[in-house]
Image (cartoon, rainbow, N blue to C red; front, side, top):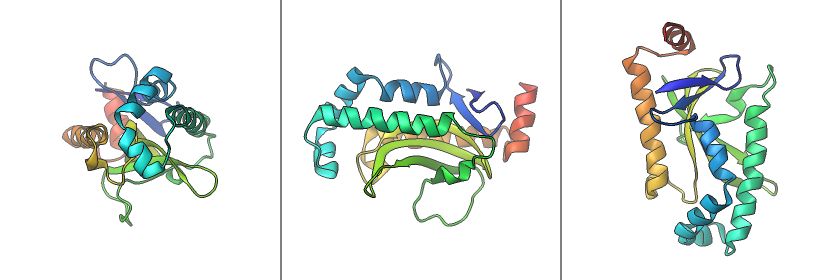
Length: 182
C-alpha cells in the first residue's frame, strides 16, 4: 500500500491499495458517479433503500447519490489552507467522546431539511487536522456490520491502522518521516 497526498500540503492523504490504479478517494468518487454501478448497487440493496430511506425509485436514488457525491467532492477537494478537517471528519463510533491513537473517522454530508447523506468517506486520523482516507461506502443501514460492503470498509480501516502501527507510525510526524524514507 502507498499513500497519495490529496491536498498537497500533508493534511489529507488517501491509500492506494496494492494492485489498484488509483487511490481510494478517487476510486470512490468515480464509483459514486457511475450510473451503471449505482443502478446495480441500489438494485442489490433495494430492501435497505426502501425500508430505511423510503425511496422506491432507483433513478431518484442515483440522482441523489450523484448530487451528494459532487457536494462532498467539492468539500474534500476544494479545501482552503485554513479549512479544518476536524470539522469534516467525526469519530466512526457515534458515542466516542475523545481522540484515540490512529482513530477511525468518517465524513458525511449534511443535506437540507435536517437529513444526512448515505455517502460516507472513512479515514484514519493521524493527528488533529491530518487524515488518511481508506475508502468509503453508501451506508443504507444503521450499523456497518449489517452489510458486506460496509463490513469491507471496516476491514480496510483496521488493515490500514494495523499497517501504520506496524511501521511505528503513530502521528503525522512519524508518517511524514515514513513517507520521506519511501
